[in-house]
Image (cartoon, rainbow, N blue to C red):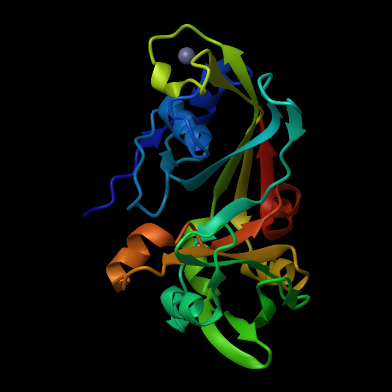
Length: 273
Ligand SMILES: [Zn+2]
């Protein structure tokens, strides 16, 4: 399928909604990204390498767009206010070489603690130390030049070519938002919570526009432990899934993540408006 990346005037579109309360257009974790894309006029596409091309201030630049909830307020739960300090997913990517995700989980996965018929492999791998948890031990990542390896003890399991991310990460926009579940009487009850009364609203804050991705700085951030490889996968144990089943349904985004505050470390320029 050919790439069809939408052209938008990003600054104009984001300033139309900035600081306003926008009802979620989808009710789940991905609702924030979907709502932002909908408001900006970007049709969700999972096949294109980039999310949009700016046709004004950043003439013809292709951007990756990320959204993140920060202050979350839900009056229907016991602790209604919380600050979300979770990582931003930079790239979701299965290994380029060596053991595939499906092979990693078959060998290093562990039985589900909630009794479901599945094996899980969830771990956050850094270069700076081995994981030593209850279920996953002796694993880390290690970089040699442009290659990044998943390591178990002293054995290289899987390999990534980090230069393959340059195009994808070249230019990045991060928009953070406050999230608030508000009483709502709109005509889309499927978007409401279990009481049927509350709808999540987002107040998008100033966007951070990062340009000038630096591979050398990216390497440094990896080496300092500021970029992690999150393994996030599970696989059923009650049948024999095919490779296609595995890739389609059970890899929940194994990929590289970083905290928002560390992203400026690997870009030359940051613009906020
Ligand atoms: Zn509503």
